[in-house]
Image (cartoon, rainbow, N blue to C red; front, side, top):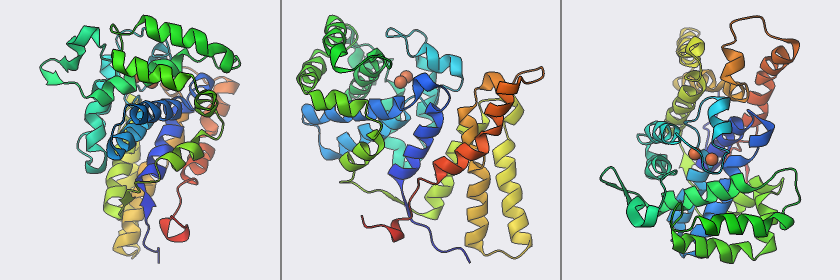
Length: 316
Ligand SMILES: [Fe+2]
Ligand SMILES: [Fe+2]
């Protein structure tokens, strides 16, 4: 008999964030860095704890709608073009999942330029300040050169951000960022290999617990991100989930166990997010290297899901 499972939304979101950044070495920890920077800007301008927390989650998921490696790499350009599609897809993914519905609008507008105040609305809708924070945090994150020592880059990054104050970014947020930028720990934490635990510590004031029904809904949402990346796998995980649930019922599993099997079906290919659709859809024979990349997906699924803790077995 499978026991009742209680997990935190933060752990599960961190999982997806990890998975979607595994697609390339140059993207590792991108979502976590944006989350960390956005949280700090929100704190600096005095947003309330709930809004800070929403930015932690929005940062961790903001580029979930960018499904291909090319789309993700294009977004690394400081003045990225055609960046609205992935933001809209991200919005559509999260808007109907109640525990994350508040972050959906933040994600939707995270590439809107401030444009001397015109960016306070977009197509008649109000753009939340959280979206402008996310935009600034995202651009700061992409301005960091991964192969260079960080503190030597601070001056150049600040000049680049300041040059775009009023155009790309809200001036008040640029001022808040400049204050943060004087603190060396801010930069060292932003690029730290321990950024997961730093973020977990920052957001621990609000623990959002998921029950099995919510976990099932979130797993289904992840499944869409996993499956939609390729037309060849468009219904694969949902099909595995439905089959696993039905078979479990037929052999006499309890209702709870059937639900857990369905969740396992939805998530069994999570590690495939580390494989680019260019490889998944390659019409010809895979090269040796491509084959090894495909083969590693089961390991990634196991490793990533292994980081989710059962709240009953830890002190929170
Ligand atoms: Fe983005
Ligand atoms: Fe991003």
